[in-house]
Image 1 (cartoon, rainbow, N blue to C red):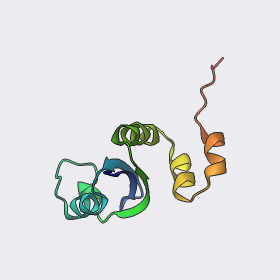
Image 2: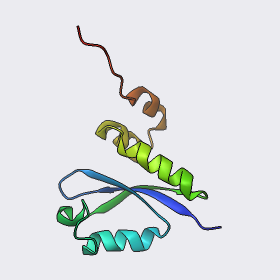
Image 3: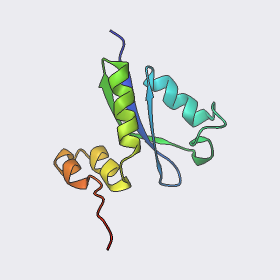
Length: 98
């Protein structure tokens, strides 16, 4: 069974990058060495791996990556810090403006 990983990197400018891969160690190495010059992380090195989780289904990993990418910074930090109880309360809510 091949594992897939969803990961979050903290960039040198304090932003977060979320990605998905089947080879976490190699992907982090490529991010940190600037292997992908057009990637968001290229000019934001050095990078720190702050979160990852394993998936046995790559399709589910891709769905979760896309979901996390839409999250607010605060919600991503709750995930990174393992504050899973706060995640539901940090969902973005849209209210009509009058």
